[in-house]
Length: 137
Image (cartoon, rainbow, N blue to C red):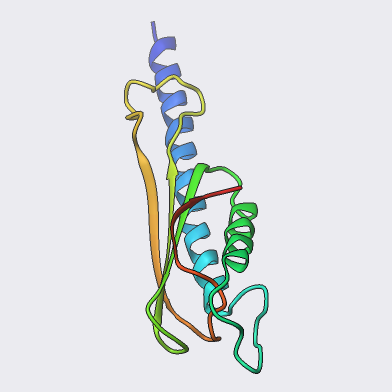
C-alpha cells in the first residue's frame, strides 16, 4: 500500500533532479558561449584585428559550446553582437527538456524548452558572425 507512494516520491525526486541538471547544463552552456564570443575564440587576442565576420569561426564556437554540454538534447545556440570591443554581445542557449524515467511524462510538457541568456562585453575584435538558433553539430 505504501509502495506506490514511495515509488512516486522516488521517481519524482529523480525527475526533478534530472530537469535541474538539464537546466544547469543550459545555463553553463550560455555562460561558456558568452565567454568564447567575448574573447573571440579560437583566435583570442589578435593584432591586427581579424578579418570580417566568419561563419567558420561561428561554427567552431557553437561546436565548442556543444562539446561542453553533456545532459541537454536538441541544443540551439544564438550569438549576437552589436558592435566592436567594449560593446555588449549576447549568447542564448535553448534545449528541449526530456524525461529520464518517463514516469512523469504526464507532468512534463512535450514542448518544454529550457533557455538561458547571457550578456557580456566583447574583449577582442569579433571574427564570428551572429547566428539565430544554430543547432549543435
